[in-house]
Amino acid sequence: MSIPTTDRPAAPATPPTPRVPRALVAGATVVNRRAGLEWLRSRHGSVFTVDIPVFGSTVVVADPLLARDVFRAPTDVLESVEQNLGRVLGPNSMFALTGERHRRERKLLAPPFHGRRLRSYADVIEASARAEMATWPTDREFATMPSFMRITLDVIIKAVFGAHGPEFDRLRIVLPRMVELGSMLAVVPLPQLPALGDMSPWGRLRRWRREYDAIVGRLIAAAQAADDLDERDDVLSMMVASRYDDGSPMTRDEIADELLTMLSAGHETTATTLAWAVERISRHPALLDRLVAERAAGESALLEATILEVQRARPVIDVTFRDVVATEVHLGDWTVRRGQSVMVGIGLIHSDPSVWPDPERFDPDRFLGTRPDLTEWIPFGGGARRCIGAAFASMELQVVLQTLLDEVVVVPTSRRGERWRPRGVAYAPARGGRVRVRRRRNA
Image (tube, rainbow, N blue to C red; front, top):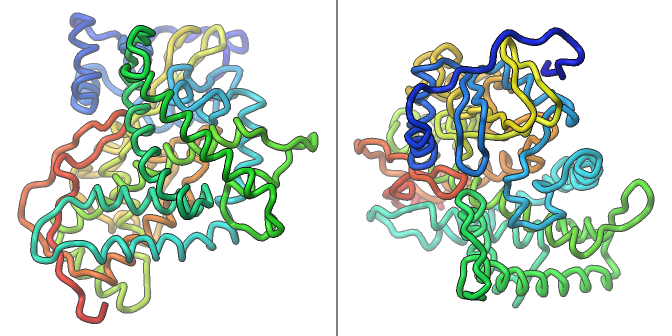
């Protein structure tokens, strides 16, 4: 466990720093983060220090046991970094909250992502997937990512926001624009230039945020006036009805920021994982045949294992950060000091041959009959900052892919796998998860 040095003797060394120009290291971690981090690991091992734009001096951890220590560390030792999406999602976003307030908010928001409420969303997901897949062209290659983005967006607007009619239609336009721009500003912050007003990136974000707040305000007012509030399954209604331990309700601003956080965390990442899943299974015809046969038999073990392997081999979010808030922290044999950040290299751990034999081989059988070790398989992060919607995302991935197997025949391809392309904080298939399908006769 990572602990302050006041509790035990100092560790002997700080993690090594690359003996190359800082500008080169910074460029390698920004222009092509995955390749840059892999190159640095090959030179310096599983723990090293780099100077990263925005984050500054950062200790990269690519060892599963040390990553576990990072995730388990108390919040007075390691805390969420200040440079995160909370800056663009709002001060009440789960990303922006720390300490006791983060714990309190997480406790309040956990119920809709478990049990009966979680299961109630399956029909919404399946209906959205079937409607979108009905528009897919046949016998012509196309990119699936835009379709999956529409599916996951529709699901969140209905299941999380509880929106219908004009609010639904407008949120479909406003939300993607906000998320795309906000993701860019969080990774490469652009200066706020007052002279440009609404023409600047920050100005556009503020304009869309004002419209978003107005829509959410109307949805909250409608929920507060509803006679059946306790019977509704959407997350917004749950937030309106919920109370903190002291009996106080969530404010309008808290609800608006957290809804936007759920969208940012669960919309694009889930859609991208679905695009990667199609990209992977279309290049493995034997696996595809097994998945079709399994679906016909009404079983799901192989599909579940395939989803786990997609998340291992193609993690959409490949890093996660913590700030050092104690004077000094021990990570194994290393000392990390206050003012530094710690980056857990999710992608590095998922591609480590000492952890995953032949890691470049896409093999869902790794997970058949077993569950992943959450020290080594960490697409949702870990600890108090683990994605609160992980169960929702896993269920959505399974329902959408089951619907795909029901509706269409995926035509295998012998093309090389698609490259990784950065989209803000996420990595997507460079060509959008292209595939060719035919209608299934009994669909």
